[in-house]
Image 1 (tube, rainbow, N blue to C red):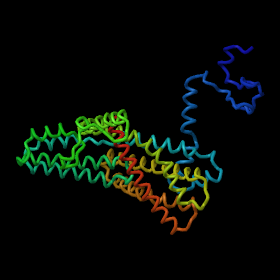
Image 2 (tube, helix red, strand yellow; image 1 turned 90 degrees about the vertical axis):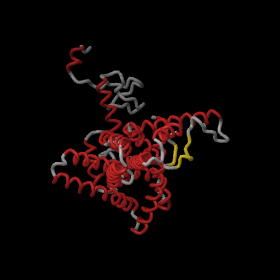
Image 3 (cartoon, helix red, strand yellow; image 1 turned 180 degrees about the horizontal axis):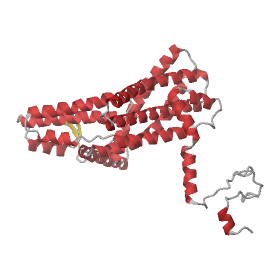
Image 4 (cartoon, rainbow, N blue to C red; image 1 turned 30 degrees about the horizontal axis):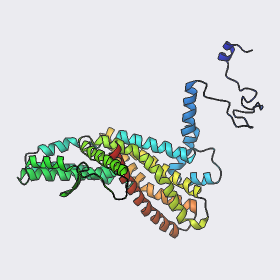
Length: 381
């Protein structure tokens, strides 16, 4: 019988037989019943290590995967479909790892707080000062919008901030010119809620005053929708005070939104290449690698922007980062086009047509998904 000191001093050995069915073991899994030798009754650190290895596969495969993912459009997909899979991170793990990492870094790197300028506009004592602050803020927001990728999750929030700055400036100018008393304006904003079209107070809707009442739906469903609308209404007001709170909720919901859009992206590909008689799962692999690349590109752009801000005193580094960001933004659509051409091996004319159709349809789905994410974030945060 082996003593405890011997066991502690030597590496653990595999048992000779499977504890479940008694079959002689040839490795870490029983070939007869499939039960692994390792169970949960072991060191917790070992379990944590196995969890991250299973979920993310963070080993040498990651370095072999990221290089081709950035520089060789369609290479990983072609390798996977050809059966050469073990040397690379699986498409699902790759997408999950890059998506979560990207939006976590974006969440840390971005700041949507415009409270300082907003408070200055509210306290401005002249129309000229309001106009100066408004133009300054809109110029900065416009630059941020132009530098953002078309599918960037921050794009919608920047446009919302742009609208809010214009509206606040118009309201302050109206007060300074004596068209609207300040007290009346503040009371109107507090009574009418935030579900208003800019400049059209008659179209405002306050869910507390007028609950949701959709014909044909049970009363419990209408009550639930009303509660969500009230929550969203309150959160819009809170968002004006602390935009970063909404940013955190919005960016946290983006990975789930992209994950839900993946099957739709694959379905569009399946319809576009229906006569190639490919399996739906092949198109899903293309979708996973495409989205993984986009997440990695967004991550690199975010890191380059951070480097620019940290080292803005060095003009050479600032210039190099600007060129790198520009090249990455140009490389993203070109990469997807080359990937589609390589994987499906059609002529350039058909590839361009299908690439355009795919881009238009998916952009609409992405816009709808982003809008739904915004509303969900407002209703639940």
